[in-house]
Image (cartoon, rainbow, N blue to C red; front, side, top):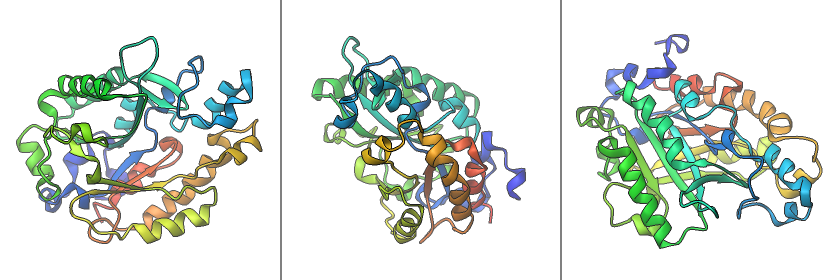
Amino acid sequence: MASMDINLIEWMSQIPEKLWDTPLSKIAIPGSHDSFSNQLDPNSEIGPDAPPAIRLLGPVAKGILLKWSVTQTFNLKQQLMNGIRYFDFRVSSRNGTDQIHFIHNLYGTSVADGLDELIEFLDINKKEIVILDFNHFYGMGDDHHIKFLEMLLEKCGEKLCMFVGMESLTLNMLWENGLQIIIMYHNEIAKEMCQFWPGYTCKSHWAETTDMNNMFTFLDKVKHIENVNRFNVCQCVLTPNIGYILGNLNGSLLENIAKDVMPEAIRWVKQQRRGTSGVNIVTTDFIELGDFAKSVISLNFS
């Protein structure tokens, strides 16, 4: 199937039959970085993950943080409609509410509200599978985690795939059992709960650089790391450090970085292959800037 023929809304249902019994860790899956950040609240208090130096800027800090913290324009449902199936989540408790919220320097919507968008899509598209990676937690003690995990179980219900091991995690297995949601939870408190996948089952490779060449050199080294027991995530993202942000106070992640990264990220993706020694999950910022998701998905059809 040619790239142009792929229906992004239901691409998993169209995947070649030869891949139906292939572990998801060997299928090419497009993802988004800081998936929730289009819903960051510019009026919220500054989050516990924000750089201390930014706080010193006083009243203007929130405006600067917003421009450099928003990594997606699309909400979760729009991302799903555009082929994204892996979601990168950072969450935090928040004063004045008993709910857990998405966070990236500023607070976003509650996770419960975000999950409603996902589940609405999955209820219609029964063969689509999503991977939710809860990998950063802030201001959360055991009580927060326990209540949060209970909420995830309640929301995801019978769609949630328990920890069965990566070799057993295939599209056929998921379809036959009506399962659509895989949750990785990077905290030890969930290790006794079989409904959640341990954090070690997802390794996210992040270059932590503002240099494009360094990023791709790094990704070329780590993309070949073979481990049947986990997902491998290649982050096609550049990360501005505090010095870069302070030197570009009137700029934004979108204008100063993401618009330059996307064409090169797509070019890199099109040079890859999926499967053993190939790429698995690939993420980027502002997924709508090009045919990123389609380029990743097309690796399954080549």
